[in-house]
Image (cartoon, rainbow, N blue to C red; front, side):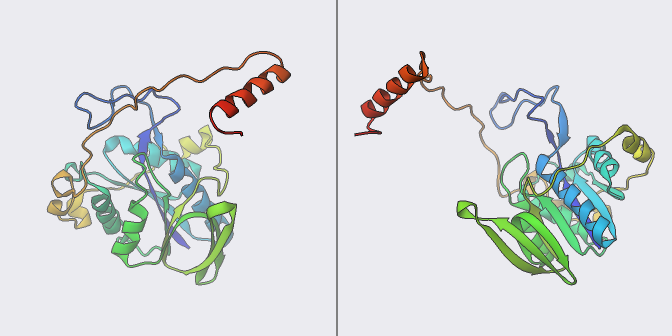
Length: 262
């Protein structure tokens, strides 16, 4: 099975203190530490596990600038056989549809049986996977936490309201957005990093992809981010002190005062 996994280089929230940039339309990006998007890491691991069971290969593709190479090589060190970078100044500022348009062009460079994305990335919109599927005219499922291959179909699982599991069959080729927790992404060791350090990673621009520059980028974006802001700080929490019995009594009194208990 030939699998394409879309990955993204994003600020590492565990390593950075995020602040709003002057002007309010973006975060301050000076001196940020970047990493692969967490959801995408689960998607790559799932692709590798599928290929280990069924055969085939995994290709990771990333849209960005030259710095994107670090996350592509990281996922190749994890076990993906090939990488692909989509780099062009004309791509900068693309909205979700623009990103999906560029990824569609990359996906059509080869015949892929399955395309995986993370459930969402750093902007939290969770839209590129669905848009990509629509542009490719392929079946799509989101928030997938289980994948089983059954010949020309996949049996997929999705967690639904109340913690129940929904199982569906979906025809290949298709696009899936992968939820965290579907697996445990493997550790990337120094040996794996060295193994892929000198592997050539193709870099495709808009011309190589056949993407009309007027259809992507900031000028073509139909959705624009206009403001970031930090929520106002509310009142602090009430800290209850004393023995367990005393704290319990205080809690009951507070619940009664707030209308939580009659």
